Amino acid sequence: MSLFRFILYYLGFVIVIAIPPMVLTETAYAYLLVPHFWVLFWYMAILTLIVIVLVLMVQKSNSEFYAQAFLGGTTFKILACLIFMVIFLRKNQVDKLFFMGDFFYIYFLNTVFEVYGLLRNLRNQNLR
Image 1 (cartoon, helix red, strand yellow):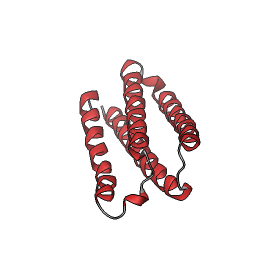
Image 2: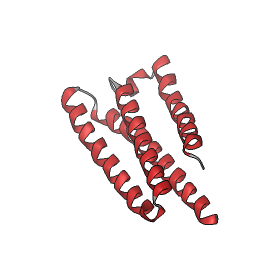
Image 3: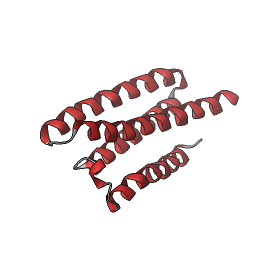
Image 4: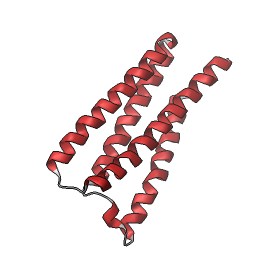
């Protein structure tokens, strides 16, 4: 799968996972989202996009380092998210339970897409 096509799939995925929080903000359940939720959402979305693009570029240039780039990118992403989480919690007073739910909603869905998409791309490469 080409890089451009993969990015389009990811942008579609981001739109799909942004729909439930948008619905929550328009209903009586807006309290389920932490203040500055969209900062958290876009930070993780852009970080995931950067990791995906870098791993795909490594695969295209030297496929032998694909697994190392994938593991390194995933490790970088979780560390960057944890550091952001600490800073976010220090700067904002939020309900910890709602924050945990919001954080894991965004993080795990982005990680699932990243793993599924990159492994699917690797499988397509092995079939050639």
